[in-house]
Length: 325
Image 1 (cartoon, rainbow, N blue to C red):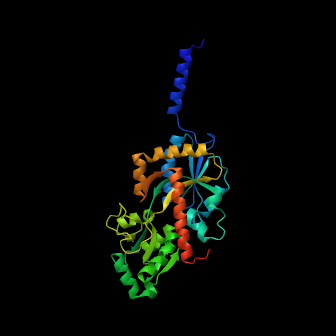
Image 2: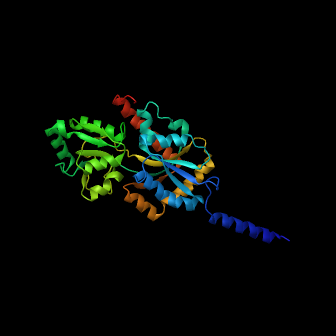
Image 3: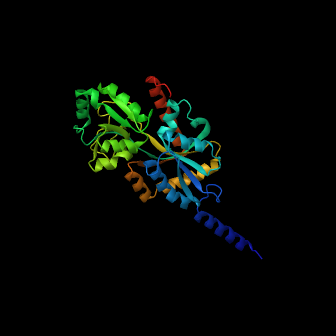
């Protein structure tokens, strides 16, 4: 016979067990798939694996990081568009694929506004300007002086992708400092790094996470960063705002996106899990070690950040008269 006291105790025990058990994101028979648009071993891939290792415990499902490299993240974004909106697939991306690529590509194969929903942000980072070890300048003013001394052979700047934020920065720096710079697009940050380390190109622009380890080792020199404030990991490196280039104080984002139509309850569950994961000190240290600024942004805040960043770069693209390719 079940008494009132027994029934109440049973309810309480069940509630306690529910609180203690992992949250379930979606169908527990399916893993959570995190798509990444860049090669395995890069900063996006590593960040996804750092988060996935802890998200599996919080969500109670396996987490699989799936690299779909190519075309600046287009392939992974198209895979997200084709995925069922069931909460089992997320796309981990930074600003280039979501905010920049649709502005500079005629047919990217996806529309972020129509096809995706911003889920949460987990980090930001800054782009930086680095010079090769054998480039004689020790700072950015010295680099400007060196380039203007022989513009025909010294103005090549490696960038990780055509029509990317770094490529636009090459144009802006050339205009601001009256240099004849030529952007040299590569297929990702790794080949830019390889040619910088081999002194095949005198300079390159990319994300701090991609350059910082070689800067620390003295194999190249980061001489300028974007953003409103100096990067805590590079306290001796001036911002371009300090160097006279204003208007680029907003820093790029890292976040997660889901297919449009994913149930809000699933997105809320994922947000709660991600917030817990980002509160773990070891996770934050690993992300910071990559050169990222670990910071949780809920869905509302991250959506607003992504829209503002896209609008800012839309104005820049139009002002520069860039024709989509």
